[in-house]
Length: 197
Image (cartoon, rainbow, N blue to C red; front, side, top):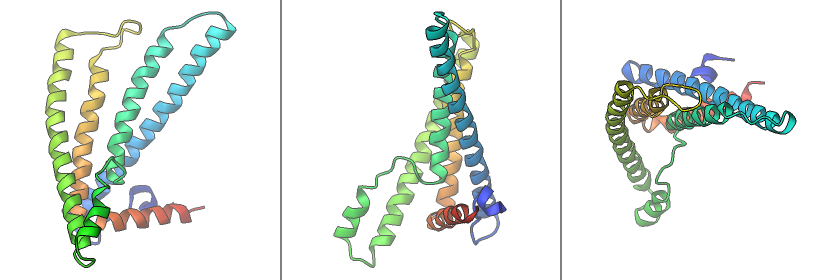
């Protein structure tokens, strides 16, 4: 595998934009790997719970609690990673409307402006969310709450949203710095991944 396949191709420009894009790609792949491992463990825990209930007639409660927390972490990490590949929930309904309302030569510019604006607003939202999450995690640390069954500190569960919010902001900044190159970069990285046997 080439480094382009592993880390995503870097923008044609040099400097900060290139470094930010590479870091975003590495971070997104790490988030996706951790989320994947979390989901695999979740399935194993659910199978353990079902197996002990059916085979041993023993109801274990800890696999259910652990699987909930793994699901929370995997969901938020996967959602943050999706921002790098521009697969997050977007306002795609605007693209056909813009193409109908504007002239064909102006449509790409208007669509790019809408994409940049939505990415900027999302980065602002996730920055605010990260600040709120810091307060929540600090509160959970101060109170010292733990989960009922496993005794897991609840701040570790609350930290999932904090980590996802911070990394989402970074991914949105990387996409903003590299627009309109981001679409081209992702297309090239996808075709390079498909070419690797």
